[in-house]
Image 1 (cartoon, rainbow, N blue to C red):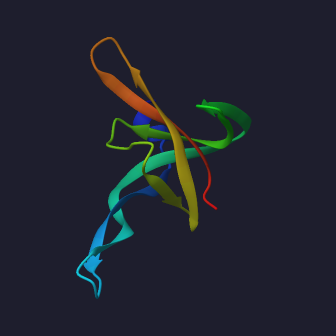
Image 2 (image 1 turned 135 degrees about the vertical axis):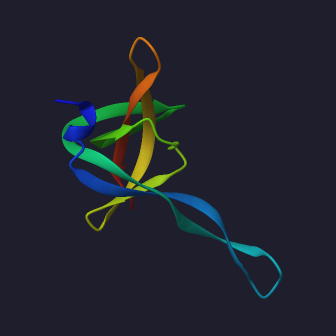
Length: 107
């Protein structure tokens, strides 16, 4: 069984980008679809992640192939939007293999 056969869901990775020009000539900022990828979402008991002095609890872990995703992105899956907190890259003996993304529901 290959790793990709375990990715049984499809999610959309969104990236914050410049949108249409407003009345003052400035671009508005909006979320735009960046990638649509096979994935697998797992709910967890919670993992504490420390960002400076702030501690955030990640309740979800998303498994992806080696795709372009960063902590500034968000993920939409089954009508729910998740905030990306941490992206961990895993490699085999040759190259990057997959990514595990720690997330929480976007508020």
